[in-house]
Image 1: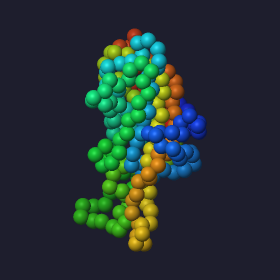
Image 2: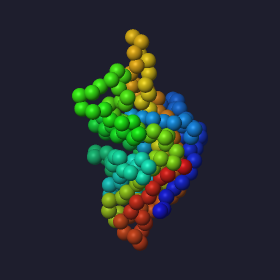
Image 3: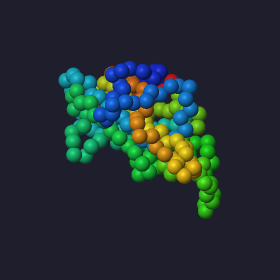
Length: 202
């Protein structure tokens, strides 16, 4: 299987995301349980014919199983133009509906305080490294040359609230996870490139 494989990069060039002044870094030994927001920064190669008018999608996989397809697309803009570097944010229950991993779902009508899981987000019971993949797909034969993909997340954590209880609360700051910097031509025309490309978090 063709794929980018690399360790998370702790680079000052990737600290800023969505005009944030600070971003947390992800360390491979930290077991991240729930992701409530995903931020992807997609850059198109700054060379002739690198841009595309075709839809680019990013499928989030957990242990090889797809759990959500995300469109790298703004309806009102021309995405993935030559040299383009654009951020895409997916957040909340509409974009990231709850997808349990090893935490069992309670039977209908049964609840606990606090709940054993938040109301939305993706669970990675064993952390992200070796378990998270993002598969890029191009939907057409208008070639796109991937320059880089950066991944950020906001975590949902069980935290104490002001009246001595516990609630699931999403981080306010973004956590930087990794960058994949290999140039990849993509197209449904096999003479131009590959239709899918998998980004692995080793």
